[in-house]
Amino acid sequence: MELTKVEKEVLRMLVHEFPICKEPFKEIANKLGISEEEVISITKKLLEKRIIRRLGITLRQRLAGVEGNAMVAWRVPEELIEKVGSFLASKPWVSHCYVRETVEGWDYNLYTMIHGKNEEEVMEKIKEVAKLFNLKDFEVLFTEKEIIRKSPQI
Image (cartoon, one colour):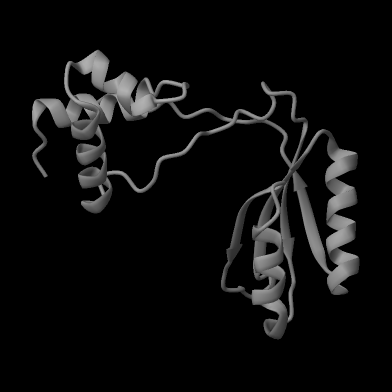
């Protein structure tokens, strides 16, 4: 899809220079010399056309002092998958929660990213969830290194 110069500038600001302030769309508008309503309209259009999927932040956990990060692969009985998944997805310390098909030799079907101040705190949360739902089989994979992807230039 072909974007106008203004749409490209709004997209660039959304991706690379999103202002952290009370009125970010107004700030973008002021920097680009257009109205806040135009920035919001362009943003909605970019979302509708699936050029962008969502607006959000990426927290670089280790830089923010969060040392405990683990992917947990859970083996959850099919009849509990929605209940367990919904519970985990509702927690502020879970950033990702996905159901996936199992494969031969690896029959874990629910995956979460769990965060805490340190590995001990993450393990406490995992053990609480396991006890609450009587889940006995899970694999915990702690983050060893975060690899940062540079955003493509727009």
